[in-house]
Amino acid sequence: MEVVNDLNGELVNFYRCVRFHHDVLLTELEFVLNSRDEFNDFRSQVGLTDLQRASRWFFRNRTCFGGANMESFGSTAVGGGALNSRANRMEAIRALNLRLDRVSIENLDWERCVKLYDRPHSFFFLDSPYTDCDARQYATWTNTDVQRLRDCLSTLRGSWLVTLNDTPAIRAIFDGCEIRAVARQRGVTHSDEPYREVIITPGK
Image (cartoon, rainbow, N blue to C red; front, top):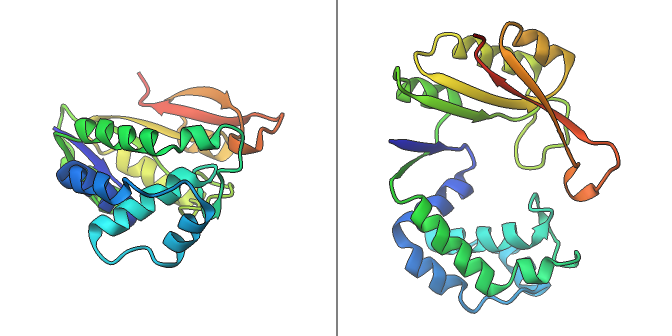
């Protein structure tokens, strides 16, 4: 059994439409042009039905700036037109439909979801909101939130992996766990300074 959980209701609605009604969703998107006018129209009127909401959310997500700022049209970036072509959008939905075929889709608080599906054979990947960052889609977490996560994980029967930003406080909260430091480019800003993250698993 595989489960995906997110508090973003628009994202969860999109997943459900892709899984159960992807043919109709493709029809909704078939003649949508990669244009600023379409983007602005979809931003001001996000749709009345679940399928309209899903198609307009997906179009805005694919054509917004950096895949994160859903208020800003981003197809002016180099290569943006090719990436966001109608053909690529349709293929992405078909591929996601296959990927979600046997996946349960939840819209729960993370702690409730974890406890609901905790089994000795369960594996949880938790990509929680980061602390001290400029998040657009979610409120950033505090160190208190991270401690709540750590306390919950310590009670699980299943195994887990967590990704977070790399800070002294987070390393202290997860002291005794396996912590692997990684670095990546800072998204669309292409800053010379890498963004530092940690991949955390239970200690041996």
